[in-house]
Image (tube, rainbow, N blue to C red):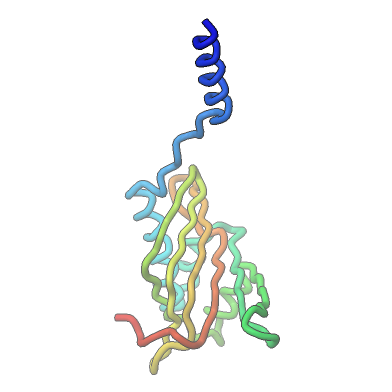
Length: 167
């Protein structure tokens, strides 16, 4: 009897120590959602390169913005954060004095949970003669009315170690 009681106590204690079962993990993204997110980003960068303001804006949520991380004097860990509303970025990059930006991305990783998607991608900003800077872009997108729209673009920034222009 004591052995049965001891075994029961051990079993209950072990079950309590584990706690409640964790929910099943959310898939990173379905192939359809991943393709749709990448499609939004591809159209956005195509419009940026060709200075197509209407097409560029069409890929953004009205509250879209850019969060740009830029080095500042003070060492390698010193960084400035510049937040630009969509309209301000459009004026700077695509306005009359803007030159458009050739910024291909690659190695895109997409995660999705309901109407929120994140994407992480390597980028290069290319000039006619080479690469001006590179780093990683982080995107937040929201799915509304069946379409993925960019909420925020954040980027890292470096001017060395970018390698040659990508094909």
